[in-house]
Structures are given as structure tokens and as C-alpha cells.
Length: 501
Image 1 (tube, rainbow, N blue to C red):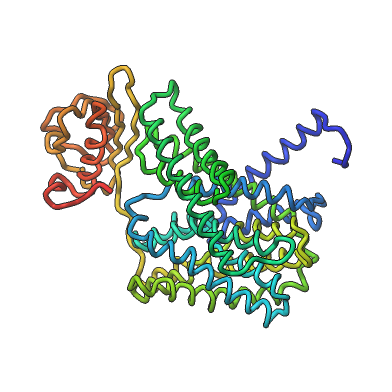
Image 2: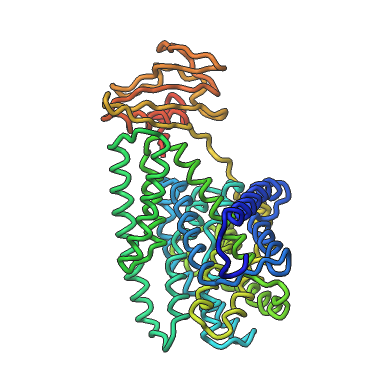
């Protein structure tokens, strides 16, 4: 559509058709990616490139709009990642992830910037911008890989927390390096980063706690309202953190982390809704970034991108991991995997639009170098990570956990828990009476092979059963903890020390 031409219903219909077709292709791409091992990031970027100037011919060069929409997508992706992160897995990893997200980022920026200056010939400002842009691991890429690579909980927690935390300091650095005029001294910059992270953390934790408290104590009239409320609270955390001159990205991740571990009503529905929004954000963001790039302009920047990426991958990331994990005594195999698992994705490409919007000299070249670097090293790192985990003998089977959905019964001051027993659950063979639920909770119905019946205390539970458990409000959490504990440890879970984390 030509600039200045009024938007008509016909044009709107055409736009909706194109968007719907892109989404369908994006959904199909997930299937292709699963079978081929090719990262979905590359397929989505390829769709954008195919639509763009060197493909169908759609011209798009609005870096500012791309940055705004990219930020919006990152908020959704971080929220989805936080909602899906288990506190029990991430808690032991917080110190390591915090150091990786701060000290590790600083080391990576310094080493990569030196490569950009001395190897590629960029001036120090451009080199520092590239070093900062590519030093952030991508939350979407990490969360996507961790869904298919069963790693030990400690490693999973470190990677998830790092990808959620390190966007915040990196964004601050890129904005600082891209600003007009003289850059602040290093100690002033460190102070600003620390202050913004502290404000973002306080705002995110406060809004997350208040949101979880409200949703647990207010019964909404429809289950579909809970997912909307959760996403709205996450967005409020981002906006609140940013308006308070803190890190909105850290705020949204921490708020979502609290909400995701608060055992909210209708949680499976909320989780599914958030996951769908996350996929929508990824598809839209990657396609838009593919549109922004002009492939025929990338030729001169391929070798510089390969050189910077090589230093980042085999020097900067391993050195940052070694220095950051030195106080925590991680085994060398885990350090090796962490060094290779610094996956890049859309985040660096989105951050590369910041110098373009700020009119930094040669900002288009910075964008092209980052784009090529992400494409090449995503092709190398993503598909080889499962192989490396196997070679290092770090794969760990995922423990079976119960699927529990809670619906509040406001007038009865209780909760209805819907429990699904998976195939590998140790609840198989346990009698209802052996669940030892707290007083005020009881199994009221069992659905087995499509048939419902009221169980006796001697009824033996089986794989695939679905249970309806009614619990009064005061014992709801205790009942759910007991059910999860039995699901993981069997009828003797309490005595064997099997927790319900």
C-alpha cells in the first residue's frame, strides 16, 4: 500500500489474509523444526526475508517501529518464560545466574568489543555497541531448547535465570553506548546499572506478589479471565519498572516468576494461553526482523560477523563462564555446557535497532553484522547442544509430575482440584486412603477410561486416572503439596523425604 493512501476495508482484508497466512506458515514451521532440528528462529527470519525487498518485494525500513514491537514481543516472551519457570529449580541457581548476568556480561562485552576493534577495525564506540548487543543470551532460544533437552535441574535453572536476567543490564549498556555525546565513566555506568536493576527487582517482586495475592483471593466469574489478568499484571510490572526509571525487563520476569509459582486457579489454562502468546510474539518479531534486513547488503559484513562471532563463541563466552562460576565449584562438564549454551536469537537483533534509532554512525553495518552473526552461530550452536549434552553425559530424564488444575468455589470457601496421573507417576498403585490428605480435603470422584465413580478408601489409583479433589480454603495448598509429593515419591513420600517442589 502506497504511503498516504487511505486504508480501506479491502486493504484491511488483504492485510489480515497475509498475517493469517504468515501465522499458519509459522505454526507449520514448528513441526518442520522439530523434525529437522533447524531452529525455528531461522525459519521465521527466512519468512520475513522472503516477504521483504529481495523476495516478494515488500519494502520495510522502519527501525523505530521494529524496536517498539520488538520490545513488546520481548515483554511477552520474558513473561511466558517466567510463568513456566519452577522456583524449586531456579532457586539454587540464582547466585550463579546473577553473576553470569552481570560480571559475565561485562567480561563478554569487553572481550567481544576488543575483537571488534582490533580484528574487524571498528571504532571503540561501535565495537562496544556490538559487544553489548551480542552478550545477551536469548530467552526465546533458551526456553525453546530446554523444552527438548532434559538437563539437570541446576543447569536448567542457571540457563533460564541467566536468559531472564541478562537482558536488563545489556539493554542499559546498549542505550548508554548509543547515546549522543560523551559516554559516562565506567563507575558511573555501573552505578546506574545497579540502581536500575534494584528498582526493577523491587517493582517486579511487589507487583507479582500483589497480583498473585489478588488472583488467589478473588474468584473471577469465568476461567478465561485468569490468563488475561495474569498477562496484564506482567505488562504492568514492565511498565511500572520502566516508569520508575528501573529495568522493566527484570521487573516483568520477576513478576511472572512469582505468578507462575503461586499456584493460581485454572493454571493449565493460563499456562497454555501464555505459551500461545509467546509463540505469537516470536513469530511476529522474527518475521518483522527478517523484513527489516536487506540481504544483498550483507556481503561485505559476513567476514566481520564471522570473526566477531568466533571470538564471542570460543573466547568471550567460555571466559565469562569460567570467571563467573569460579566461586560456585561447578563440575567442568557443566561449565563446558554453559559455555556452549550461550544461545543468541532475536534479542541481539532487536537491540541492534537501538543505535539505528539513535542515529549512531554506521549503525546499519552494526545491524548487518549482528544479523549475520546470529544466523550463523544459531545454526551451529542450537542443533549441536543436545549432542553435546549427551556427550558430556548431562542428559537427565524429566520426572513425571501431576497435572493439577484448581478452580475456586467462592461461595463454599473451597477449591476443586482436578488431578491427572501421568504414566510415570508413583501414585500408580497407591490407594485413596494412603494419600493421607489433610483434614478438609477428600477425593470425591475418579474418572478412569471414560467412566466416573466415587472412590472408596481402598480404591487403588492407576496411571491415566483423573481425580477430583475438594479442599477447603485453609488446606488447599497442603493438599496440593501432598498430592505432588505422593506423585513423585509414592505412598511413603513423607517418610522418605520426597518433596513437592
